[in-house]
Length: 465
Image (cartoon, rainbow, N blue to C red; front, side, top):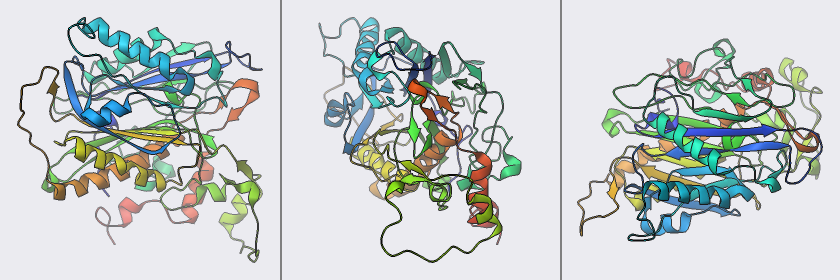
């Protein structure tokens, strides 16, 4: 319903930056502590200045707290963010937190001596299906590099990329597959540049390496309205390198929405790290069921059996081409980061963060027992000085004005999840484990069958009946 921002990314919120470092090396049998390595780190920063000295309002919400996220208790208690948000794999989370602390101390020598300590914020997912997770291969220098990239991205540095690659087998994600089905992109638009269809088209890097497809993505070098902003690398990059989602390769995804001027004209962006099970649904179309990849598929059929399915051209195309793949990897987690330039306090940001779960549910996510589902929201509308005065004057939205932002959060989160799958490339990991990129042609066939394409041309408020 709502329009995306210029880049259809979390960086459409002015000042927000994203940086990735992707680690890929080795192949074949797992040697714990050695490899193969299929992991990385992703950093989101609310602004390019000293975040410890100039904090931003923030909040967190755990839908299912089966995870090892770091720093969310103090974030919830004090309502502010004072380090960049880092995303990585589960067993690397403490090392990444340590790197965030070291990075903050290097820029604030008084931490822990003449002022308070620092609260690092880290989200994580279990990428052990593809990655040598015991090796904890993300080190201090990788975190520092991702932060530097995020800060440069936040400053809108021309010609910079949000993706840094470290490893043996890398590939340029040169070809684009523009397609965001829920907003009506069709097959003829799949080679459109990001965002140019005006309805939030996702761009998927083409698979370019047989063993490891780790793409260093393009980034726009355009500054819009004086605000720093750039496209964000998505899919099998950074913390998403070893992530799997609902039977396919997942990873990093992003999207944004801009409110109508009558609702404040605010921008909201979402960045997700998808590594969870479910039943993939795109714009209401049961993609996972049609393509034979869905949760608990090994338990079906059971009970009374339905009659035979009526054959059509579409079902003949889909039937028999895919054996049913039992998607039993239900755990793994999802991290959602929401950013907005709307003036919100901690209480309102927590309300906003909760809505991320609704966007996830629209994609077929159901928050399984083993899924660590953590959502973080922050506002760039004001900064909180580390040495704050006794009292502060606050300007915040009214509760009634929150509803449009809630819709934006749901839509942006939903699209970001789908983008994480569409942009992902096939990755072969440890012990020959394979996470396949979704086949775009198969996806389009399902969407056509369920009349789930072209809504922006056919339905209000943008289309003509």
